[in-house]
Length: 381
Image (tube, rainbow, N blue to C red; front, side, top):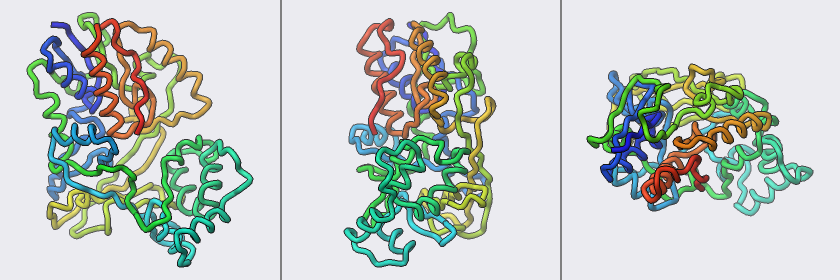
């Protein structure tokens, strides 16, 4: 049997291992730095409250691809869940994303949808034709007042730089609606696993051909393996030869209360003077359960060091040269596939990660090993 080494036991690594193991031609070793499977999707029961906790921050599964929803649903029972976020600003608390109700409450109006569209057009900066930065995109899209109250402080805390230094593409992910719909996502399918995310990964690796090595760095000597799938940070694989690619990391401050702490699962704190970006109360992520006591987390963002868990690639223009050098070197290797958000240095949602891992697996199952892809093709949301 051919021997495969996989770095990382998140969705990318576990799905590829699971798909390759099915044909019984490979012996697969997964090396996981942490003491658990699941990567940043790992969930567990809080010992004090018995609440199911998303240990590395909230994960609401959402996709508009039926085949991806069907795939995740065959691995675990999925419960419907609509993510409704509140935003605390200097002017009070409002629903996010910005919608008709947000606009009317914030400006103390009673606009119809058409009136609200016209009003935002008047608020927007018409001098900006092609927005190049986050700030320009916001000013063109929603105008000065909504931008300053909802996005400026939050974005500065989240990314650690002035919004005018960030690319416009980051804000293009945030919708504005001219209805009262406060569903954070536009996806057709949305939900949360009934028993948390961890059982998904347990099912994926439940095969005799798969061995997971916990608390293990990816080995330096890989000569005994016929092929490698790498899901860790791209720059780390090459020992930061061209410099460290910038990531944001997150810190979570755990708190307990004897009763419900806030009205819904996620509340964003948009003012720059408040050090945390949001508070998540995790029992709201499982409304089908009943818990008297509660656990909630204040979330802080920071620049990732080499010892921090990387969450979000920043992808600043000045880092493109180093990224291009890493990609070129990665593509020159003959027996390694770089897959997942860290190894490809892209922001990917869970459904995109799953789709990418399945796409890579299918190509590997259909072609000889020397034709396996070095980098996967981008997967649309």
